[in-house]
Length: 315
Image 1 (tube, rainbow, N blue to C red):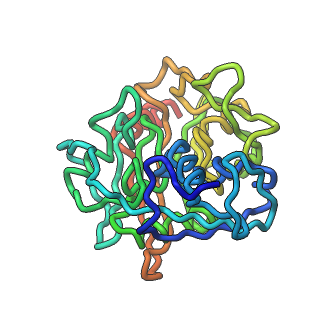
Image 2: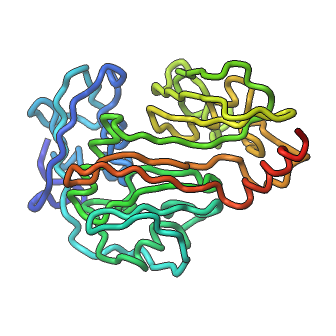
């Protein structure tokens, strides 16, 4: 295959090296790389592979190449030739922490993380463009974003301001070294005080807007701890090892305790003042690029506190 790609310049690159873990055995190369570079689209990665920007065990593979456990994948991402076209958005968002490398936001519910069809403006990435226009990462269509929160999930999200921060965070997410804790209110009484849901997730074959537990899906692991029980509801602490799309929402629905007010997954409620799903990313623990640990928490927002107050009044 020729090293000439469609719109991809490999003359000035930085390199990321990945090793294929057991759970990614037989996975397509383009999917594997895209899932580990969370701020880059699959179409971009496909173009990069076609341009010779991705090697497997030192060889130039096809886009559809199936990986094997232990394969060495080298991703060479070109630096951007032009400034990002993302427009700035002036939206005040609480900044929990900031240094030269990273910013940690307490994202409000209703805010989309990155531009997408139907949400081209007014996203967290647009806010980042307003606050820190220099935070442009190589090849990124979603600058600085290394993980995501759903639109109606509130809480902590870290953004990389530099290349070294982006690489460091991506490696930590890939190795599952990051502690990610959520607070969720679910419908019904969860009987066990502690439980682990280990169930693979993929796109729901019957509804493309949803994810589902699917045998051929990607491994997803969530640990649940009961914090309080109320009439008709259970308050949970949820720690996730993986970060699949809608993971907590899917796993809670799978055990027949959907997240309260999550109508997409069967969590409709009529007796609580909730305008969105009761899910909040309350804690993040990871290492900064210089190796120092950081552990931050975000309190429950007012709308979720009001719902809990209603439940407390019933006990």
